[in-house]
Length: 317
Image 1 (tube, rainbow, N blue to C red):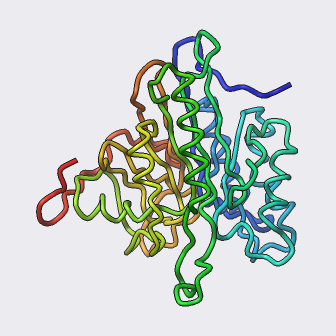
Image 2 (cartoon, rainbow, N blue to C red; image 1 turned 90 degrees about the vertical axis):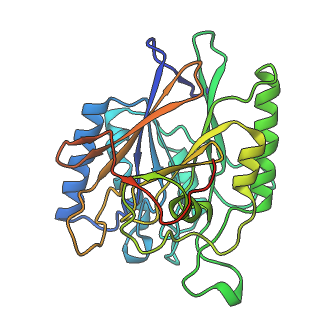
């Protein structure tokens, strides 16, 4: 039987975003991280858990398959629906591929990810519909593989991959189909992937943002394939959620789309205190909006993140 997601009787749908968990081998740190994840899920009672990449650090794991199973064991054992996209660290090891990891997640009882569409680049591209009171799609969640490292020789060292044109075509075709089915009105949607788009740098540099940017850069690809423009044109995706940069947790709005970082669930690798945790996202049925806040490892809930005003004139958005 096909697994389906639903808005709850109060018309809400809550997502907990874990990011950059980087499970590799059993350790005291990983035991503490799992306990924190359990506390957050018990407190938030989400309808879905989303891992936005670097679920495992395969290059440092003697058994990447076991590490992945360990990483997703928290929602699986708590019987909470979950899904994952992949990051650059998930398939660095020679003994594991993204295809293996995607098939592995699909084999889990409480995983709601879907098989890959044909002729689309990457692994782990899928869409999940959230059904409303009338059992029709009331919202959609897009999951895309943002790749690993640049495949171009002159951009390879230290630079990251990008969402490809076949993925953008798949997104626009799927978005159009859901819009038609929704009577011509774009379905309220969110997007999840690992590596930030180049527009994450733009929104921080030129717009008012909320939260912290403690990494020197948003480590976006140097190639811009136009996924952000496609989202603006389709008019359905209200916000995107990424990981990758462990010291960033900000969000800002650009041309009507909220570009959001999660909160790293593992070490931020900074020379200053930075509590780990998760981002929580809540949709409301029938409304083109969402609420979001941070849930930190000490139990703190951060609804109002610090305001960042860029130097110079902000973009008109």
